[in-house]
Image (tube, rainbow over all chains, first blue to last red; front, side, top):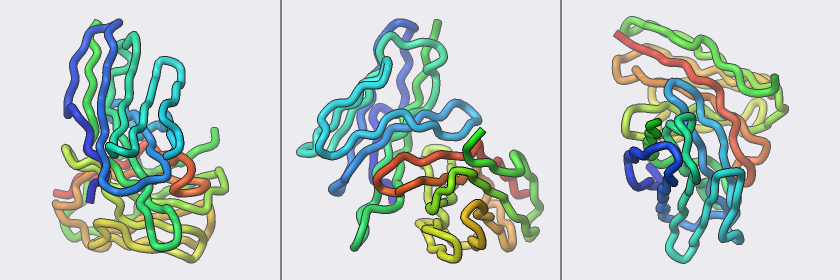
Length: 114
Length: 113
């Protein structure tokens, strides 16, 4: 079953614009992760934000986490054509004695046009 | 380069055939897993392993078999291929699942006709 749900499903922007996508999840988490997948390729880890963090930056990426609303957002600033990809949020499933398997949402497809 | 290596990259099977998808990692990760990716459904966990000799089922295990004889390798076997197993398969590993990020292989695109 999917834990994270991304919104929107698809996003089309022009180079230089900012892109924002959101992720909602259902159960408690100890961290939330964002991945990028270029067409026909594997997933690449972007950012991991822990449950006690509210915001995290990496280059042109900014991730926020609101555990009270069970939601996260990924912002890509000054987008480039190379940012065209699918973006997934993922959360570790909580088991009886530890945090475990990573569960993914269906992803947001981002297209950046020159 | 350190990472997760999957072979083959592409495969076409006939219904009923069997095959093994290979996955190897050189990061000494104890945790390894297999996912399948279908359009509009994100990634779904097939099987996973927390160390050599230990495997367990994920969300969609039917029709697949795994074993883990070494830390490095985690092959996925399709016992009798069905068209419903047409998908893209990803192997992933992690140093500490639930606490650290995953490293993914580049995937195997499987078509069952």
